[in-house]
Length: 627
Image (cartoon, rainbow, N blue to C red):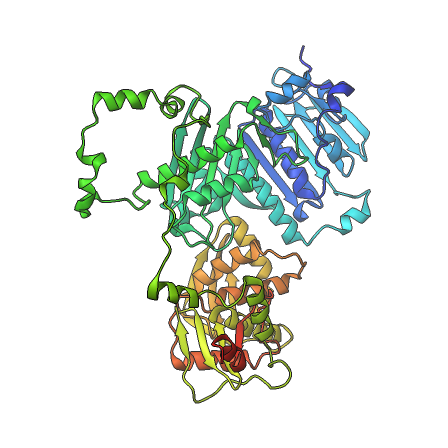
């Protein structure tokens, strides 16, 4: 029988998590692209106009549909993927609920054209507000074309909640990247308003990653490949120097389905421990293939969150696979045993491993759990391993001078009391009885190339150099945004900056606001920009990095409060251009920083609410020393 699509019985449909409501054009893009993949297409084209508000069209050369299937596909819970409830736990396709086209037809005008290979003619169906307006036979090549026009034309209130075209376009690009990355063997293209943004030929996974995320990753990817009888992990992780200050290019796929998992992300982060700064995020694109019976994808409307039967196993395998990959490529620090002759004298090295010791080792339960098939993750709770505390004897009681010293170096109060005391001594202009002022003739001291100790008329303050500079820049940019543009330092030799397609779209959106803040940037070709000038206080030679990191900061700007685009840009630039910990400052630089900080309207906190300095009053210091 040529017809494949059938309505699910109520008892099965009721056990399926509700499908994703079409919240924005990107939601429809995701559903349509996944349907094209499931149809076995080798070429998929996405065409959008007006950021998807006017048109979203997906054209594929897949299996197509019969006339009956074409009509049935718009019914709720009409699917070719599931016949009984057990099929829910054997899903290897992208879609399975049978709700995508029904949801799309409910909020837009839809035109479907399709033809199966064996059919001589195709089918055209036009639907508006879930009502079929026209159905006829047409000439059409093999495959399917679905055009979704005028999204939310019948729900004006929801259309009013859509963001600006650049914002909606970024969401569409995100969904496109997630699907295209998972299937490098399929040709994908994305055309927006008549301009082709992505043209992705069939190729390897690495080629697809480089085309999607940027050529800068080409020589900075480490292959991750581990295969076990339980699961297979493969993909790429970025070398430590690709780590960014914001959570950017991180992708997890389970059975080719993009997922979000803070738990598995932690596994990757732990593999990079001590290799990248604690506040940095590595790049990775990792695929996990395992038996569908071991996961449940029927738990979330967007299907981007899934449940594992045993997530601890997955965590351990992901962490080990990434660590192994980094070690193989000589990225992980290694021990050179020749450097320490003392190691050669250890019993484990000097004494031979006798047959008796071998027999005892093989008889242990720990050995069995790691050598029997499918047992690596089952650790015997009755293992003869000692508890970790048993390796550390109780510390002996100190006596004499050391004991006396230890007693006097204990905190003067508990943590809460100390924090309350410090909080009471933090001050913008003192506690009201005396205005806080920096002493001009007293030199400042820099600690750990991060903190500045400055004497005041009431004691001293400890300034965090990055936080203080961030407050200064923020207020400078606010003034510029209100009509006093920042002076531009023109480049003698303009710098060309190529960007990934998604970043190029974002930067083009931000150009007017950046011009007010001292950046003179122009579009140069498809995804390339030319920097003609930067703010006068931006370090020369650092323009390209500053732009790239500003975009990362803006894209992943996190806040519980919703800010305007300009406010987000100002906060991102303030953070990006602020002097970072680790930079040594001269006396003049420290003095200028202090003076400019106290000239701001709110010198005691950063734009995000963190303190810029802590004030310690003289009487508080005397109390600490019992004076």
